[in-house]
Structure formats: C-alpha cells, structure tokens
Length: 596
Image 1 (tube, rainbow, N blue to C red):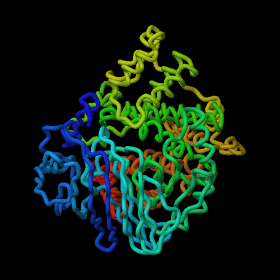
Image 2 (tube, rainbow, N blue to C red):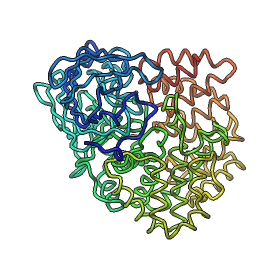
Image 3 (cartoon, rainbow, N blue to C red):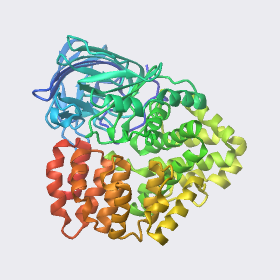
Image 4 (cartoon, rainbow, N blue to C red):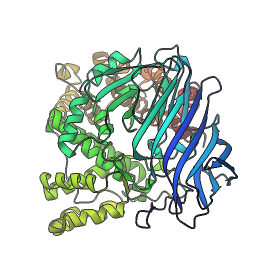
C-alpha cells in the first residue's frame, strides 16, 4: 500500500487522483487494423488504493470506451466533460476488494498520438506504417491511463498485427517477424505513461553491438547501421560515467520522415528521425542524447511537466559528456557553443523577462507542449555546467551518480532537487550561494550573471575563416577544411547578418547548400534564404517541407515564409500538400501559426 510520503505530486495536466487510487501494472491487449486505422484494446490494470477510496480516475482523450470490468465483473463508468488539451476523465467506481480494473476501448480517427502512414509515406513505398508519440500528454489518446509522469507502472502486452509486419514497443523486443503477427512484450521496470510506445511496420533488425542494434525499413537499414555503428561505444561511455545501464538492451528505430521530433527516449528503443542520417555520423549526438535519457528522464523522471528541465537539462549535460568521452573536449565544446546560441535565440524570441524562461515553469491551463523549448534543454545544461565549474568535475560527477541512485525509478520535483543539491553540497554551501545561486536559475527569468562562459577552439578557426570570406567573398578560402555539420552551422550564423542574396549564390555554387542532404545544414540554409530573399531555394523549400515532418525544422520555415509580405498564401499552399505527412504534434503547431 502506498504511503502518504510516496504519493505522487499533484499534476495539473492529469485528471487522475493517484493519492486515492493508483495503477501499478498494465496488461495490454491490442489489435492493429491498418484498413480502419484503429487500435482495439483491453487495458487491465492492477491497482493500489487507500482503504476509503471509492473510485479511480484515468485520463482519456478521443477514445471510445466500450466497457469496464472490476475484478472481471461488469461495472459502470462515467466520462466527464471534455477539457481543452486534457480530454475527459474516466471515473470508475471501486469496491472494497477491487484490485484490478479492465477497460475495453478503441482509438478514433483523431487519436493524436497515432500516426498511420500509407505506403507512399514510407521509405520502402510498399507497406503502411504506424507509430505513436506519447510525450507529453498523448498517451491518453491511444490507451486509458493515469497520464502523469508522477505515476509509474510495469507492463506486459500482446499486440496482434497483420502477417508480414513487425511490432515493437518500449520494452523487450523481438528481432524478427513472426508468421502469425502476434507479439508479446514485457517491461519489468516501472515507467510513466509518456514512455509507452508502439510501432508497426515492415521492419528489419541488425545488431551493431552486443546490447545495441538498429531497426529500420529495408531501404533505410544499411545507411542507419553505418550511421549508428558507434552506439555500443556510447553505451559503454555512459556506463563508465554514471553507472550501469538499467534497461537491458538499447536499440534505435529509424522512423519515416514524418516523425515530429529528433528522437524520443522510449525505454529500450529510441525512436529516431531519419534526418540525422547524413553519411558522416556528424549528428549522432542525438543518439547520445536519447541514450542519456535512460538515466535522466527514464530512470529519474520529472514529476510534472512544470519540472521538465530535470529531464532535459541533465540529459543535455550527460549527452555532451558522452561526446567528450568519445571524441574529445574540442568536439563537445562546439556542441556547447551551438546550444548556447540556441538558448539566446529562444530568450530573444520569448523575451528575457518572460516567466517561460525560468527553469521551473507554470503550465497550468496550458498545453505542456509549450514547455518544450531550449530553456529546459540549454538553460538547464548551463545551470549544471555552472555547478560543475563551482565545485569541480570530480565532485559534480559524484553528485550526479548519487542523484541517479537516490531517485532511481522515481519521479522528482524541482523542489526535491534543490533539497538534494543543498544536502549533498553541504560543505560547499557558501560556494553554491555565491557562484551558482540555484534559486535564480530556477525561479528567475533569463540567464543569471554567474553563468559559466562557453567557448570553442575549433570555432575560433571558423571565426577567422568567416572574416576571410567577408573580406574577399572568395569561397576558395573555405575549401580543403575538415568541415563538420557543427562548423558549417556556426559559419552560417556568423555571416548571416551582412550576407546578401548574391553572396548566397556564390556560396551555393561552391558548396551546393541548396541540394544538401544534411537536414540540419539545409534547414539553416533555407531559413537564411527566406530572410535574404534568395529565390533559388524555392523548389528545395517546398520539397523539404513536404518531405520532412520534424517540427524543429518545419515550424521556423513556415513562420519565416508566412511573415513575408506575400508569403502567407504560399505557406498555406505548401502546407496543404505537406500536412497529410505530418504527425498531429507538428500539425497542431503549424495550424496555430497559419490559421489562428
């Protein structure tokens, strides 16, 4: 029986009242129907409740609830009124001896976590594909659940799919298709609902290490295996830094281009965008990021989405420690500088006094998706770097290891973090107060004056080359350098302010940016082209926006296009063709931009 001390934190984004009755284990049965684009399911939960609890409340959104059973006996249920962002509470009356509930349900055509892709939207072009995206509060759109990161449960699942398809989940996974299409899954560690994941497609698997491997469609698999060949090294580096990997295997599933994020840290199986496949492994820090989430996020989880920085700030810091471990400090320094630039850009866009630039957010009555900004990622990381500088790396590493061990398989609040920080560094309390000022980072907007300064020796060379280019306009001064994605991105940012469309043409003729196969570089180039009215990009812009659904790329491009005097109609025209390829997460953001 749960105690008051262990009761989950109140979550403004969930109807559930887990302090009364809480789910502890899920047995899920699902049937996947590609023709009707519906999941039919039975979700059976083991529950724990307080002696006087007379109900349990689950979150649902756009689900059809067919029936409810208590300890296998039919029961009544009540669906409350629909609330924006949150959906409807599913209230189930309980008896004194109730320890199990079963909900029979179906998804609907507007279940936002699900993206059903036709064959033409996949790499192979012959088979449909399904994937889910549950973060932040979309798990409730494909299964009734207590959809709060403060509630953790173990699960098992049986998933029936058509023959010829492989089903994968955030659990122990099969590596080959089975003839009857019935797949069995098990997750022995308690996880929150936002880490529930399902993908079904014509997929193949290839190992890249003893505990690591890649799933992808046949057409994508060879390039993905090459790109992610160093995953096992990343895993070993992560373990050497902060302790044993707790989840068994670490595999990556490369999704079709419509996936709305760079990656999603589903336990055992990261979902990844194909836009990080460049042929030169220059964007694999994203894999390091999702791997780091196995500790910061999956093992120790933000209790509410107001505490999101606890997931992402720690993960960015950990990611860059992995990259430094494998590729040296100079490589990690480039990532830090680019991240700091992204942070400053976000603060400029939001406003430096905007409360949304505090690490601790207030997302009550708001979609928690609004908190998924660089503040959580890069301000959180800068905060941790500042602590590291103040107390020393060895002491800070001991703190992180102790933090992960102390809160393993638990959800944590910002306030608990501050208490733990103060307790661990009791001897360094004066140093923290003077050189870090933790409360300023947490509760005040902007970047505190005590923030550590980041710099990059490799970028210093790029600064010299940028000056040469600006004085000569001769692209040959840029040739014969071992340019990485990070160095090109930094160079383009340095020259952007004074760059003219005619000079973009010179660079384009020399380096073929408009035809780049590197999504990061191409997106930056297209943004610059829109700002400078470089019309050569027009065809590439339309093709990119229709072929890639990653919100990080498409939303800024649509915004820049819509802000042009005659650009809004053009943006809407492109979006009309692109929208069917986008996941609901991306559609919602672009809809709001173009039609609000």
